[in-house]
Length: 124
Image (tube, helix red, strand yellow):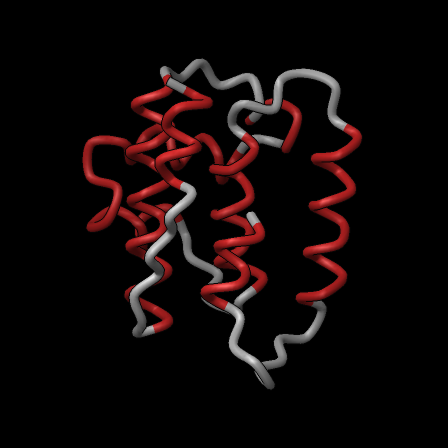
C-alpha cells in the first residue's frame, strides 16, 4: 500500500480527503485479524475513487478482461463480503496488476511497484 501511494501521490498534489482515506484504510488493515487476503484489491479499487476517477465496473473492462465479473463483485459487495470472495493467489496478483494498469492510464505515469513480487510470494 505504501509503495503504491508513494508512486501515485505526487508532492504538492492534493485530493480532497485522500489523507483521511489513507489513514482509515491503514487502521482498518491493522485491525483486521483474518480474511484480509483480498484487502489489496479492494484498496486499489477504492484508491481509484479517492483519486477522483470514480470508475464503474464497465470502465475497468478493458483493463481487467477475464476478471471483470470478480472486479464487479468487489465493487458491488460491502467491504466484509468482498474480503470473502474466493480467489487463488495468482488470480489476486493478476487483478492487482490490472487495476494498477488502470491507475497508470489515468495518472499518465508508470507505477512500477517493486513490492508486487512480495505480494505474489505472500498470496500465492
